[in-house]
Image (cartoon, rainbow, N blue to C red; front, side, top):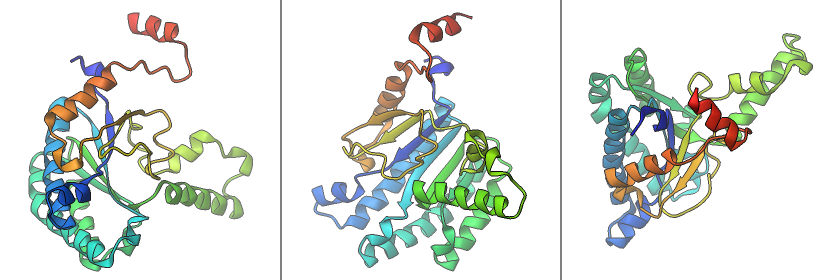
Length: 245
């Protein structure tokens, strides 16, 4: 496959862990644990295909509504996964970034997030972004608040606020926008994930539950992306002419 048809940035909603466990008459945490192994494999697939950025929706701002026991277990799983993977990520030159309101997490997890990000920040391989306690509405509102504060302080004129300025303040502003959005588990919605950033992403939905999302499923998503013509407001003829140059 030509490198030009490989997405630079893939964003994924990893859905279906609980249903995967239920189908096997296992507790929900078994599905989440199986999902961590899939994360490990998908990181590997992305690195092999030359994907630059992988963003995973690990815990939304709405997930606090789940049963307290499940939330607590997810926090422990997050801690365990970071502890186990930190050295491997660093060895493979993966740069880890966490986006979201991390102040709501237990102190131990906050400290581990900071340590992991500092250790890997100079790495030059795949950038792995974990969205945790993140919501697209939260992201956009935070930008609006910062710009409003600058206007109040006289540092910015309201007339100067435009799409380019707003984009420069949003999470992941320094990274390429997502080219391909994947959601596993059969649902067909973006669920408050990267609402601003996904504006021109190609959407790919699969019924495969996240723990079952293997290399074949991953490559099907990549191949689907490769068949799409990304016009960004232009005509198909204009895109074809540009590709000939």
